[in-house]
Image (tube, rainbow, N blue to C red; front, top):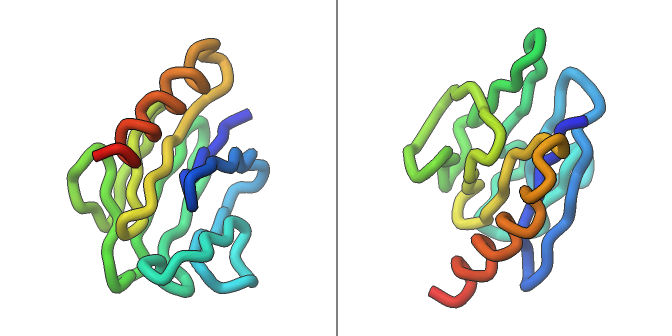
Length: 113
């Protein structure tokens, strides 16, 4: 199963992506709720298309980035670093054994800088 690991308030949460559509934002009606003022109510949507996932920004106020590049629509790959505004996340497939350790280190580095 594919996961989205979101780093918030000094901790991380792993969200398993189980459906074909995953809404992301600060509103409680989203599948993944990010309670941060830089995240729009309906910030982005993750769509499963065949064996791939696409991330679409929903005209959010603070934008969405994948690997440091602002996007409106992007195909995601294992290990991609995502920002919803300034909130950091990582798209990951659990088949990679080291992804959790690597991602923890990466997210801790972001907090320190």
